[in-house]
Amino acid sequence: MDEQVATSRVELTDHIERVLDAHWRPRGYTVPSAVRYPHQWLWDSMFHAVLWSALDRPDRAIRELATALEFQSGDGFVPHVIYHDGSPYAGFWGRNSASSITQPLLFGHALAVVVRDGTTPPSPLVDAAATAIRHLLRERVRIDGLVATVHPWETGADDSPRWDYWYRRHATPYGAKGAILAGVARNEHDSPRANPAFRCAPASFNALLAFSARELAVVAPDAVDRREVDALVAALDARWDAELGTWVDAGDAAETSGRIRTLDALLPCLVVEDVGRWEAVRSQLLDPDQFDAPAGPAGVHQAEPEFAPTLYWRGPAWPQLTYLLTVAAQRHGDEAMVEHLQARAWEGARRSGLSEYHDPFSGRGLGASPQSWAGLPLAAARLVRCVEA
Ligand code: GLC
Image (cartoon, rainbow, N blue to C red; front, top):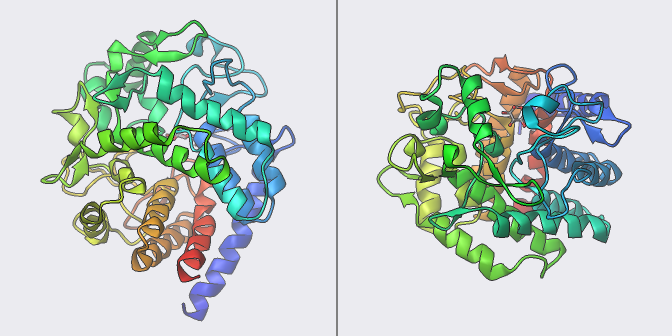
C-alpha cells in the first residue's frame, strides 16, 4: 500500500469515528443518518455493532444489539424500524413505536464479530438473537424450501429490480408498498407469516438468514438446529442458475424479475461452499462489464436493461453489500478478492464522503450523507488481517 493511500485511510478512519460518534444516541443506538434516517433500523444496527467493535467500543456494540431487540414480540419476531422518539408512521404500520415487518437478521454475524474481537456478550442477548432466528425458520411460510418475506422492504434492498414483477402492477412505488403491506397475514402474536400479495422468498434474505444462523453457532453452538440450516442452504443452492450465474428467487417472480442479476442475489456465496460457484461469482465481481467498478461493485449487473448507476437500488454501489461480499471472499480463503474489494470499498468511501450509496464509476455520493454504514471498509480491514494471519 503506498503512503498516500495509507494516509487517506487514516484520515477516513478518523472521519468514520466522528460520524459514528455524532450518530450515537444516548438511548443506546446509532442512527443511519441524522437527517434522512433519524430512527433505528434493524440491519443497519447490525452493521453499526460490527463497526463499534472495530472501533474498540464493544460496550456500544452490545448496547446497540440489545436496543434493536427492545420491541421483539413474544414469539421472537423483531421489527425493522424502532421509532424511539415516537412514530410518525403508526397509521401506516398499524402499531406504535415500531414497524410491523422485519429486515435481514444479522444478529449472528454481529455477535460473532464481537466475540472474535474478545468480548463475551450477555447470555440474554444471545438467547433473544437465537429466538429471532428460530422464529423466521419456524414461523414463516416456505416457498420451495426457502423462507418467505412478506414485503420488499424486508430484504433491505427496497427498490431492487427483483421486485418489479409486483411494483409494475401499481401506479407508484409507494402505492405498491402500502398495497403489499395490506396483504400481510399475521399469526396470533400479530407477527407476519405470509403474504399472497408478495409471494417471494428472495435468495439474498435467505442467504443472510443462513449466514447469521451459522455465525451464531460461534457464540452458542446449539442455539439453532444445524440440520435445519443445512437444509435451508441446500434449498437455496438448488436455485443456482448456471447460465445466468446467479441464484434465482423463489415465488411468483421466479420466471421474471426474480432472475435479474443483482449484487445482493450473489450473497448465497456466504454459505454455499462449492468452489465452482465461488469461481463463477468472483469472475463476475472482477469483470468491469459485469459488476466490477472503480468505487465498488455495481448493485445490478451492468448488462441488465434495468441497470442505472445512480438510481436507488438499481445500480449504485452499496457499502454494506461490498462488506458482505468481502466477508464471503474471506470465508472462501480468497485473499486476492478480499484485497480487491477492500481497495474498491475505501475508494468508494473516499470519493462519496461516506454516503449511503454511490455511483460505482465516479464514486459520487448519493442518498443520505454521511451515512453510518459507509464506515464499513474499516470493519472489513480486519478481514484482510484475518486472511493474512
Ligand atoms: C433505506 C435502505 C434500507 C436501510 C434504510 C436505513 O431504506 O433501503 O436498506 O435499512 O435506508 O439506512
